[in-house]
Image 1 (cartoon, rainbow, N blue to C red):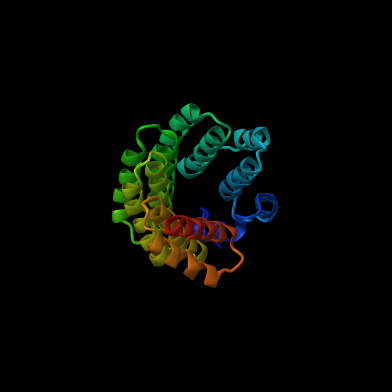
Image 2: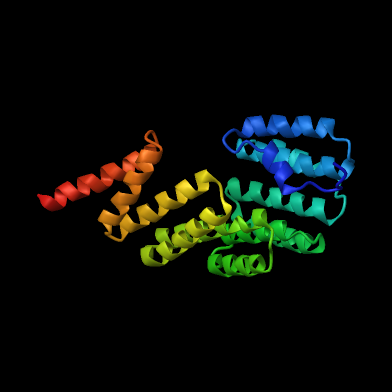
Length: 247
């Protein structure tokens, strides 16, 4: 490859989202093998820092990020994004917000819509009272983008906003967001994201008392993945509720 920046497809190949330690190992190896230059090596280092953060090794992640030279706005975006994620994960969302705001500005300077939406997605998670604001801004940004991988952000944006409304006791509003996330998962996502989207819609239907619809979805998911514990738990909850009503 000759690009002076990393494509998201390349990063997707390196990430093992089920194993942060393995992801850390992969990114370290990629840094060591990198031949395109220091800026790409710096981008890889930001992802290694992210993998460290996912393991709860926040101090180590900070050391990695502090040692990364900022080779222009793209690297600066990634550094501030990962610094913000560390603050949020370690329980300090107030300190995370200005870092995500800085990342958003850097992403615009770098002409990276993908990372701009990432920054807004993180602001929706960390800026209390502005969940809808940041989500809607991110969705507006996506409206002008053709890239299939970038459009996948719709899934996380709608899903996160759905859980925000669900936890606030607004299940009907949450269902609208979960349904939108499911549409996006079917259009742009992975099979796992589609599966989880259906499960989430069914969970919200149960919250709304629409048990027959919820159970039909969960049974279909159980046929697809018989050993899934979340599906089994929902079926148990729904069938117990049915027995209680009949009694």
